[in-house]
Each structure stands twice: as C-alpha cells, then as structure tokens.
Length: 288
Ligand code: HH2
Image (cartoon, rainbow, N blue to C red; front, side, top):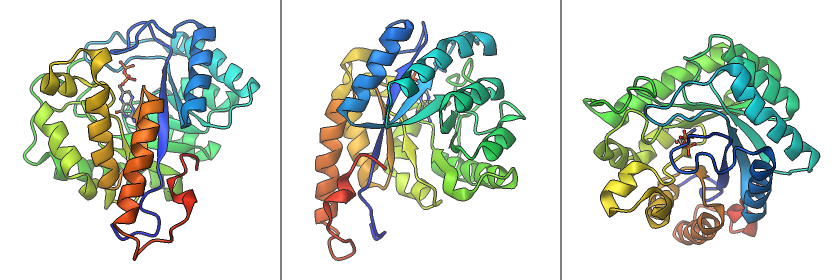
C-alpha cells in the first residue's frame, strides 16, 4: 500500500427504518427508536449514518416513495435537530425520497442501483452538491440471488463501476463526491463475495473511496453456520481484510466492535508501511 494515507477509514452505521430488513427489520421502525439507535451508533464511532426506509433483501416488497419518505424524513429531521456531527446518508434509489432527505439535512445519497433506477437521481445529486455511493448489483433485489453468473466477477464489477463513475461525472457529479461499492451479496454467490473481497485492491485501483457492506450477510452465515444476529466475528474478519486491501468506508450494524477492530487493523497496516506514510495519530481517525 503506497498512498499517502492508506489507513484512514470511516464507519457507516446502518439505520434501517423498515419492518423487513434482513437482520434488524422492525427493530427501529418507530421514529424515536431509530433516532436513539442512530445517536448511539454515532457515540460508538460512526462517521456516517446510513438511513434507509426500504429493504433490499432478496424478495423484499417494494415500498412507495410516500411510504419511504414517511419512514426516513422524520428520523433525519430529528438527527439534525439533535445536532449530529456524523454525515447523514440516505439509502434510497428514488429521487423523490433523496430530494426530501437532502432538504432535511442528508449530504450523501447511497444508491444501490448506481443511478440506473431513477432517471432523475443523478442530476438531483449533481445539483445538490451531495456525495453519492454507486453500488454494483446484478439484476434487481427481487431476483438477484437466482443463479448469478460471471466470467470474472472482479473484472465485471470493476468495469461496471468505472462506467457508472463516468455516467455520474457526465451528469455533473464531481469525481471527488463519488464513492463506489462492489455490492457484497447483491446478485452474487458466496464464492463471488469472497473473490471480490480477496481482490478488492482491483476495485480500489479505480480511484474513488471504496465502501464495503458485509455486515451480518448470509454468506457469513453459510461459512460459519451462524444465525443473522450471531455473525459479528465473520463481519469483523471480512472488514479487517477489506481495510488491508484498501477499502475506506465500512457499512456495519455493530459499530462499537468494528471501530476497535479497524483501529487496531489500521494501526497494524500503518506500521507495515511507515516508509511511505506520515505517522500521525489522525490517520486512524474515524471522522473525515
Ligand atoms: N447493503 C444493504 C443495503 N444497502 N448499501 C451499500 N452501499 N452497500 C451495501 O452492501 C448495502 C447497502 C443490505 O443491508 P441492510 O440495510 O442491513 O438490509 P436491508 O436491505 O434488508 O434493509
């Protein structure tokens, strides 16, 4: 790893305001519970709070923009009123939802369709000056896990993300505002997920900061035999490896343990590349 600051990372805490998310559906559907949870994640070290009102798990029921807005906007308003320092991210593919969220105080749009879902979203993000996360997904949530196939999953995900970066730039989003995500679990088998994580440096080489989301996902359950709520060790293992391979943002449900794991992993990586880095304590900061 030869870049100037190879070990800076940010934790993105998951705030699902949904009845049906795969690991915490229904737990934070209530506005107050969602806000309290988000504030707790910030105290634990989340630099980004990713607020979502529609599950993307395989087979999830689509939600209308009005319903999605009704779930997430009050939570974002309360977080702003509470004075959160963390960046607020809106996990949506709908321009109508993103527009309200940006007005309420979100400054990052996390779109699992990478601007393929809603033709209005890219120009909205460009005009707002917000950041965006462009994620790879093969197919769409309802059917994406039905026999996904690639010749070379890493090359194909990389080429897709490269094309989506170009699209976002052509829509007016500055490259500095773009993050990319290989979309772990989105139209991928367990083997595809593992290969993407193992060769993550090839995605990092694209340039923009790389986001990874392995938290509690089913491939960890298949490897360990653990239920959704019991996949923390697998989540830590994959995120530590992703950090070592150059990922910058870690989307997780369990912020406190991931914070400690990544602080230690980042310090270890930095110790191994001191000839190319300035050794200041700020390189392990979880805040941007
Ligand atoms: N994973 C999920 C949702 N959004 N966004 C990005 N950028 N990367 C991811 O890996 C990612 C994501 C799925 O996790 P979760 O939000 O916990 O579940 P659900 O979609 O069922 O709400």
